[in-house]
Length: 317
Image (cartoon, rainbow, N blue to C red; front, side, top):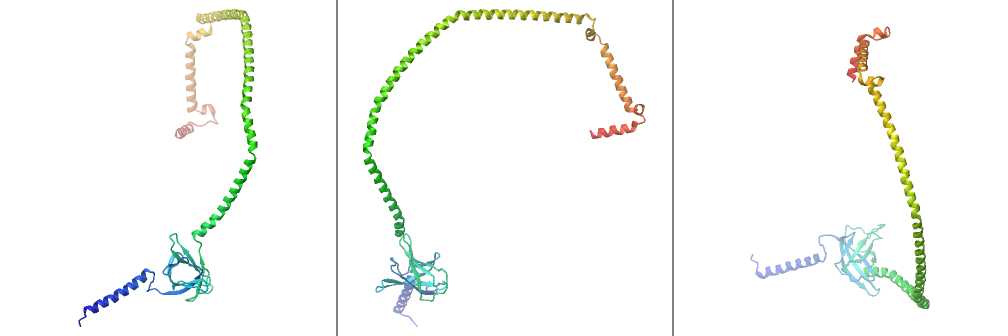
């Protein structure tokens, strides 16, 4: 069977229109493959809320606004919402109308505590979130109050300044007379300083005269000190000479050889006797070590015991 060109064009147009319809609704947020349940919310003003605006739960899109109807007799707006079926809503769930900074409106769900589950096409509690304008109004109110109170205080200060202007003028008048007082004070100080300088000059003159009178006395003191120094030096030299004479006499006695010190210095008999005595003590110590019984019997140790003790002491060292 041969299909004509007109039929194929008609089928193509039908398929295109169907795809266009589904594509347009998909772009609007309508998902034909998911099951959704309809609920309603009532507002006094939806603030430019449009169909196909999103519905969010905890920041996740769970549906869209499907229809908006105005009930003019009751002065309210009924919003129809299509929400995914897996979302459970209760009697305390709230649909909050909110918006972002760009002005796009959306509905935010607050599930709350579910005492009784809502059925499809039931009405949710509704409220409108505070926008930026309301926030600014609330923030600006205390600022405006503070500004008004500041202006009142400033006005009070200006009034006080205007009242005290005469006192300020009197203070400036006193300031204008102050340089004259300072000048007179400086003149008095200069006269006193001049008198003090004259007194100081006369005092220095008297001191110079006194010093000139003391010059002969100082010369006498110098002569006296020189004579005292010469006397002390002469006595010291005399004593030093006597000491040197005594040292020379002592050294001469040591050199004669008729005394003990000179013999120790010139003869070696003392050195020889000391050397002999040391050798005798050494042989005595060796004999005592080898034959202890000769000296300590019967309490002394034998030679073998002494040998063992010596070897043990060497190992320990």
